[in-house]
Amino acid sequence: MPQPLHLATIALIGLLLAGSLHAEIRVGQPYVRATPPGAANSAAFMLLHNTGTQPTQLVGARSSATHTELHRHMMNGTRMQMRPVNTMMIPAGGKVELKPGGYHLMLLGLSGPLRRGESVEMHLNFDNQPPLSLTIPVLPIGVTPQQPDRQHHGAEPMPHAEHRQRTMPSMNHNHQH
Image (tube, rainbow, N blue to C red):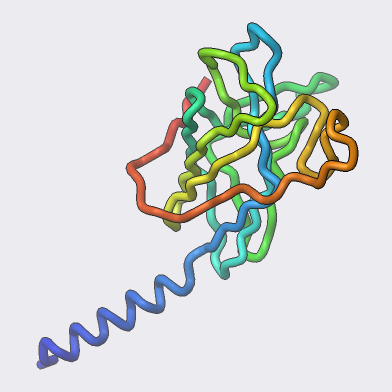
């Protein structure tokens, strides 16, 4: 009959091993698109890099700006259409780029414009790791973190978003349409 101390040791080793195998997400070059006056929607873009040994899925997001949904542009015959998706798979050691014309996070029903220089708090929820909290800069339409803002000659590219992992309540805001 196993002794309680042995069972506790085995359980602790199991927890340590499971924790070391989970996905680890790094976020690069995030930005939210600024909106013209009267626009009710915007989008967030970024590079999600899974540096872990296990695949993970982005299963939800929420933001300080509005209701947030996971979306993807897809070809439907000869027409490009935007559709909500339930998840975004990020393979172990792989990357998924959220970009115009592909996967992105839709910010729906904005209460006011998003202006250059502002930031949006974003929380990303994954299926097998703690949520990520980000502070994402708002950039003008046509400007990405890789290219300087044309209004500021010689400006440096935007740095990576400030991000931190922490446990947060469920953030799954996926809706079937």
